[in-house]
Amino acid sequence: MKIENPKGTRDFTPPEMSQRKRVEDAVKKVLDSFGYEEVSTPIFEYAELFEVKSGSDIKERMYVFDDKGGRKLCLRPELTASVCRMYANELKNSPKPLRLYYSGPMFRYEEPQRGRYREFYQIGVELLGACGAMADAEAVCLACECLETLGLKYRLELGSIKILRGLLGELDISGAKQDKVIALLDEGRRDELKELTDDETLLTLIGLKGGVEEIEKARKLLEGFDEPLKAVEELGEIAGILDGAGVSFTVDFSIARGLEYYTGLVFEVRVEGLGAQNQICGGGRYDNLVELFGGPATPAVGFAFGFDRVCEALKEQGVKTGEVEETVIVAPVGEDACGYALQAAGFLRRELSGSGIKVKTEITGRKLKKVLEYASDSGAGFVVIVGGKEKDENTVTLRDMKAKTQETISVSEAAERLLD
Ligand code: AMP
Image (cartoon, rainbow, N blue to C red; front, side):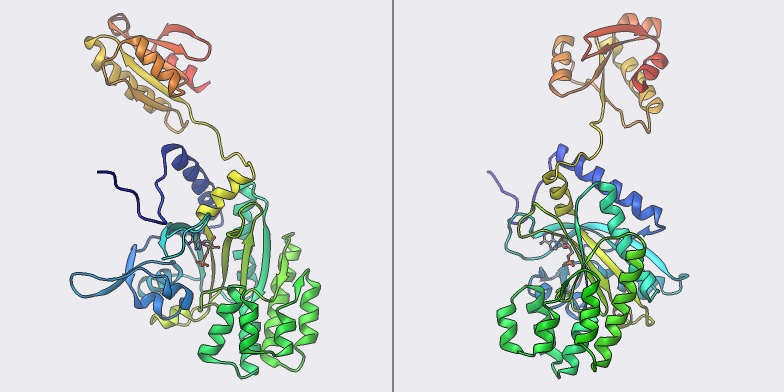
């Protein structure tokens, strides 16, 4: 009976997992270095956690089900809401600002295509308890630093949902209609947007895209509209700090983001070579979510990398993600040497720990010739041969598979050679 994996999910083979792990480790190292701490939340949650503020797009795509106790649950479609719930319930008294990150699978019922899956992975960051341009700038800088460390070429785009919602409010477009306008903008469905509003100021605003000078254009365009104008000043301040930090970006006033909880800055990162699904990161400021889950008013900003897309972009751009790891095979020759082989393998693992070298023991009892064939087929660089003679003399025979040479030495000397 052959059973396929469900549509929109993937299996990851050992080489794929090894690349994903290297990329994940590299990103986490950067997050650690900025003082962010890892958290973990459940894979399934009460559906209402995401229904209140995640936006219609996500709501429609959620995997919702009743458990045997009749609870309405869902597989998590994103993690910002979960982290805010955790913060409201358990972390609200921590010293602020609180810097958190997470990684893991998310689930959305999407039409699968390259870069778009039903089970996909995110690494995300939430900076809680800090308002103001410096906090926003830190989140953006952190996203950029991760991508710089990975060696990816990318484009950063900044916008502001506060400007958009502020203007829509002044135009008396509010509630569900406002959310609809934002969703259409997020999905790039501008023709349908025009059916909802033909306001010239709005249509001009969402056409503004370019360098920092676009902020000045928006300032002029929005003269007389108090709230959106204030938001333009805020975006200008963030842009000024990022400019000063040497971060390159484009300003795009049409960025809306599908998630309804954003309240200020919104940003996206895109890369070449991934076709339509080229957005590898999205984020922004969300100042009301913690309060919505019963916590104290807590300003916050965060972002999430689409981890699958980051890995695909690295492959697409030909970026090498770390060294190929070395493997050593310890092979007993004859039954008498089996215990000694395990002992030697254990010693080597301890001596080589932290080096990334893997020590496998030969366990099938096959002839040495076959072991050497296996070593060369599986890319092992060395075989440590231990027979009765080696056992009696407390030595091992270290065979270099590439050079096709071997020498009989002590186990400690073998460890030193392997570390060279
Ligand atoms: P969001 O949680 O919608 O703000 O998305 C954040 C990032 O997750 C996006 O920029 C994408 O890179 C990635 N992403 C979102 N949905 C999917 C999906 N269905 N498959 C793969 N990546 C996704």
